[in-house]
Amino acid sequence: MILFTGRGDLFSTFNKKYPSGVVSVRNLTDNELKAHFRQTEVLIHNAADLACADLKTAVENNFLLTKRVADLLFEVNANAKMINIASMSFLENENDYKNIDNMSLYAYSKYLAETYCLQLNSKQIVSVRFSTLFYQNPAKDGLSKLIHDAVDFNKITLINDGTAYRNFIPLEVAADYLFQIANSPFEKLDNKINLVSDKKHNFKQIAVFLQTLEPDLVIENKNLEHITDVLCDFSIEKLKYLDIKDFNLDKYVEEYFTKLKNKQ
Image 1 (tube, rainbow, N blue to C red):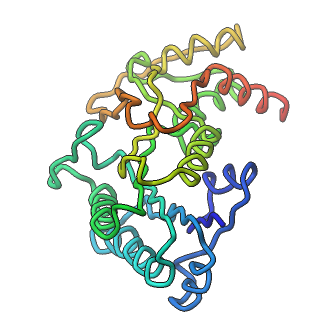
Image 2: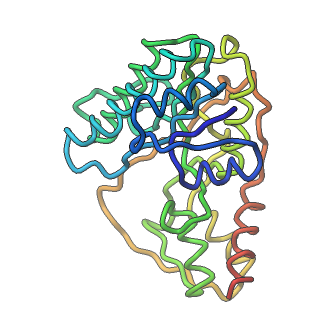
């Protein structure tokens, strides 16, 4: 059985295609969690607090929660496998951690969680970092909001002429990768995996494509300083033991655009 530790878009998308369950690790006692974990073949730990108000909250909700989950899992189920959903936010580049002084509270707490997991059980835990997920949810990512604005307002606003690049992964592709990892021998996998594409796109490219779908689309621009860089250059070397998903981002953009149009 594949078990998630939190609900949300990732679990919902995964569960539509693959049999899985979910428990609320924040609301169950240790004994209640142990009962679930005894029956679990693969635990996907996706519960996280993205909006950490202070260091204490970040450490409690991301690091200590992850420690509790991993400790309980292997206490009662020595044969289980665990996929820790980590973060790109603590990386300087695709391989190296940032200096902790340069990490946000969220990034620091997720860094502690990843390093603890891999020290605890490097043979049965894989830590996964996603590049920029395309949720098809305007509240979750900039690409979704761009498409949503194109449909709802027939107008989009680019930041700094849309020159910023992202390495987009559709949520469905992310779910497919997770299923592959869950069913792979962990000894063949690197224990830190960046689930990424070998292609990057900037927002200007997306805007030009949206104009092919909506020729009257108005594109405006806003110039801003101090934009945070987002990692977008990756190799796919560590995905060599997986079936690499060579997807067409334009196809997913058009599908979401059409879905929103049909709801009008």
